[in-house]
Length: 179
Ligand SMILES: CC(C)(COP(=O)(O)OP(=O)(O)OC[C@H]1O[C@@H](n2cnc3c(N)ncnc32)[C@H](O)[C@@H]1OP(=O)(O)O)[C@@H](O)C(=O)NCCC(=O)NCCS
Image (cartoon, rainbow, N blue to C red; front, side, top):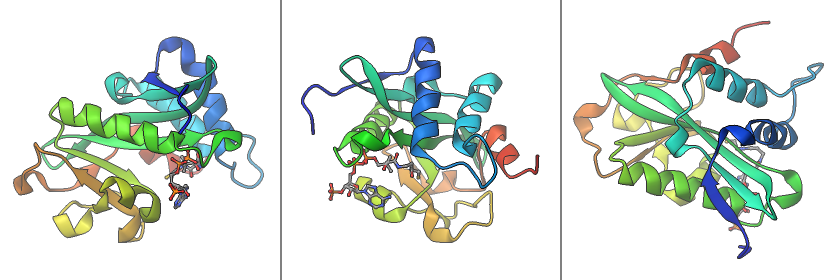
């Protein structure tokens, strides 16, 4: 990994740069001008559901090249953290930047006593950080995805009694709605 990489909490001044990184990393649906993930980031912010202490940018030479956004979620009767979108600008991928961003979320969530981090993503990527399929732990998926993509990282504060249905922040649910 580059030694000049800086991972720091996102600030309000990073808002446009983060959206640009997310737009560059993901592909818009056919016929659409924008990626679902960039719209999601904007809506999570507008709703006040971004968790600022768990939302980081990766900076190289003063430029934002990566981003991870975490948002308020519910698991059973308690709070949880939804991780995503995670994005690294295509010209800076495969340099360990995505891993550094995920590692920052995990370490900070652990320090803050969060019990769990939940995401939808590629198990081949997130498995390296200890994420595992959530359903076998009794964590109910909020959508129709294959179980292997709906993953959880349980932290030290985790107790099996905390399992239950998982709900992302409302902006995630609006992603599925037409229009
Ligand atoms: C996924 C993403 C964030 C990874 O960021 P990155 O900085 O390129 O990742 P890293 O360099 O930290 O990769 C670490 C390892 O994961 C591997 N990896 C990267 N993307 C992967 C993927 N989609 N599936 C499996 N492994 C992957 C890399 O090969 C690397 O492995 P290695 O250390 O054994 O060589 C980045 O590729 C991206 O922005 N992709 C487009 C958006 C996206 O798909 N986001 C994730 C949504 S779940």
